[in-house]
Image (cartoon, rainbow, N blue to C red; front, side, top):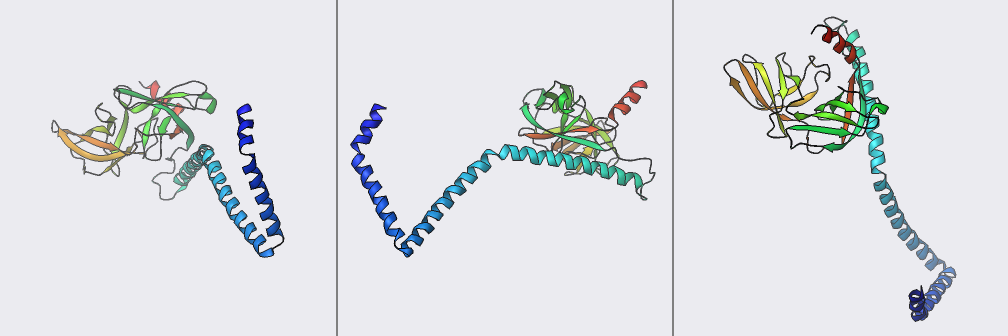
Length: 275
């Protein structure tokens, strides 16, 4: 405090000069309409620039909040779209049998707080749990493709099995537009690729074909994208082993959707009775 007072004492003549200069300019401009207008205009330009910078900083500070709100809206719209698709499918006159319909899906947005891709068995952690309606075996997806499924939940967090998990992850996939299905798994080599196996040798496959999920899964909805065919080979002259490049970038995920099949519990209970 003493140093500050000593510093002000040393420059008090300069401060007094600047204050008197400001008063003189103000008095001059006040008594001269032209110069008064020029000063007001210059002041407005300066203040406009300052206000724009303040607004930009405020927008930046609220980016996460705005992004969360937009993701919540997208999740709601996805759920509503799924509902209407189910209704349209069940009432369409073009349907082979109106009893067969697409089950409505419920989407919930979540943020990834932990993700591994370098281990043999990889997992994801999201910031949503049982308090948010998350339960085990719900699918985890993003705008590009499937990511995994929920394994365990606490009140505020959930752990999911990643598609990059050699032991715990399994689902079925098919070439889009065909009915030939196989098993999706990871070989533990490259986080960008998974394998589709057990595709019959008489199936038509081409590089670049899209692979999607099937109706056989009671976790993932049908027709969700998985990846594209990178290459394939015939094994024992009986079935194809297909290398798929994932649509989803497993190394950089921030926000995901947790998807629940409406009839999931009913279907699993019925299937378990027959085992």
